[in-house]
Image 1: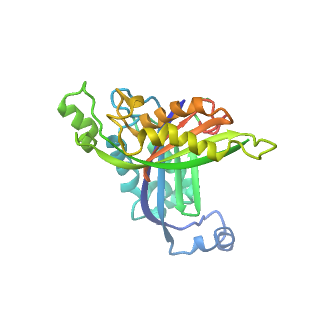
Image 2: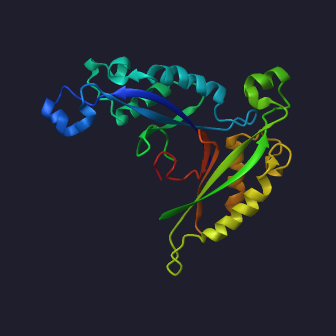
Image 3: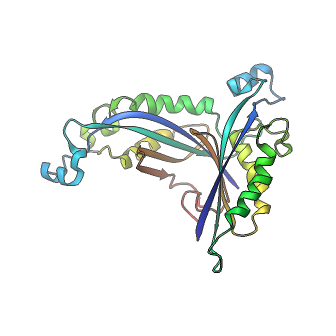
Amino acid sequence: MKVSLTRRYRFAASHRLHTPRLSESENQRVYGKCSNPYGHGHNYFVEVTVSGPVDPATGMIANLGQLDPFVETHILDAFDQKYLNEQVPEFAPEKSLVPTTENLCRVIFQRLRTFPLAHVDRVRIEETSNNSFEMEDSAAAPA
Amino acid sequence: MIRITRRVEFSAAHFYHNPNFSAEENLRVFGKCNNPHGHGHNYTLEVTIAGEPDPTTGMVLDLKELKEILQAEVIDRMDHRHLNYEVPELAGQIPTCENVAAAIWKLLLPRITTGKLDRVRLYESPDLFADCTAESSHHNGGRA
């Protein structure tokens, strides 16, 4: 039996899907209204899953008293009420990384990997209630 | 293979306290969950069974049977109970979401004889849940 713990967080941010690698008409064709020049926003939900042994002394895989502030500092403070394209360094214009939710999964997963107290297994993001994106740790040993 | 999931809810009280810790350490580690008077949650349990549908009935496992198993093993034991004092399967453990989910997994495993117990997901609140899966499950990072 394997046990994991998932915590759900939320933040609101704006973004614009647009890449300088494509022409304006190509951007319009690929991204449609998501490419409107002034951007738009979402209420994102982020699910963070940690796994590992349950500490018999605490009954916990990870203490939420430590996971919550870590996510607060590394994710929520950095993304909440921000324009992803210009205020999150990973999406800075010179990086040419389009802030799709696929790429947002990667960025958030990379930031959370540094959590020292448990193994972050999975990140799942709901961009709206109708779509979600998730990423698992591909380096995890096969079960 | 098909997976079927049944959801049930129960309400219970708990608090977190390790008798081997000092009062200060209990408070430091468990925070407000250490309140000795306890507090409660509406738990939502999702139990997933995996298997092939029986060619005659078209069912992996009769959901009515699963409902009865969940009633007997989980609801009758835990609903409107104090998890620290009234559930022997949790004796000596901190009744965290992880430990309660694992206790439910152990209770259900011998009772599921048709199909295979695939996952136990226990929500303590809409923002927090624990999953138990078999070590060989696809849920372990998508690898069987």
